[in-house]
Image (cartoon, rainbow, N blue to C red):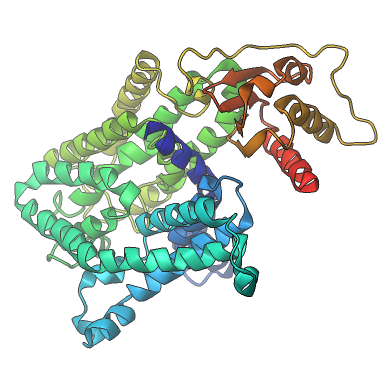
Length: 492
């Protein structure tokens, strides 16, 4: 199960990689719109580009997870992920449910107005990957031969997602409306309620259900309407904005500090590649308040850290609400919205949120660093030690037989030698890769020539089971994996 979750976490890196860019587009765009002109063409252009990505996270995750979790990372799996997503979000849309129940759209359960979320995207990708792994090599009778193999996968994905949608038709309203009711119940708990909300807000991010909870506190579902009231400067000073303010110390200070801790605890030879992900994601969190890129980088690889993060978010929300330090946001709790909220009259001692943030930065850094090292958590840059019981990764230096660039690209030559060392097409079942390693499934481990692989100059090899071996390549692993896939296609 843990290995499956780690593979899922790795698969999420493809869609997550686009989030920092989207966040920067929106952050800069909002700054221009609020500080220069609401009619700025450039500002609207940038925010539209960023929202095009952030507004479609569900479909991005559907495709990314389908490709990443499929055994060959084939485009047919990505298409099947899209098909699964379209089936679920169309059948369970407000208009779709209205048609199924024979009622007006206005009478449809509000839960179905929030069906196009990240949780449904991830679920769609998982269903599609299962269908690909099961049916991509199936041969149908001659009369139906056109639909054999990979062409069968989208069809089976659509059928499977219809079944899943039928289950969600009954389950989703219960889950969604239960969260809304719970949110309404904790309003009366004041500062403690704000803390509970903050904890659940983060904890529910992997499911996408945090939006259901947010709607209770941020909008006019239960009469709070915290965001609109703050920016209209209506309500009670020190109270209005309490369901927003506590996020600033986390997003501007806590999470970036956690990223620094993960970078410092990364393996020495992995620090560069870890930095490329973590620093970009940390800046996005600080500048715009978009945290998904950073949170998804560890929520599946090290779930305990995500629970700790959720608890610290709840604590931050409680402290800010208790002392009535308030600030609001129109997009998220990043530097852009913080500077804009300073001018709102109802904001109460917003500068104290910076002091609180500095304290939380220290807590996040040392707590994350301690937990990562104490429990050997597999955060970005530490994946090399994650699999295998007793497997030891060794380093090797290339000898005189190390391939060099000639008529073929050096990467292609390396891929050929590695593939030969693995036993070629007869022995290699599947080829996959993470950020630094080839993940390979072989028929017979005895047919693997590790010495031949080592002579290519790879940093190390991990045998992690009877049929699974990993070749540590480094930051160029994707290109080596692509070359091996090309060789496999030629052989077939």
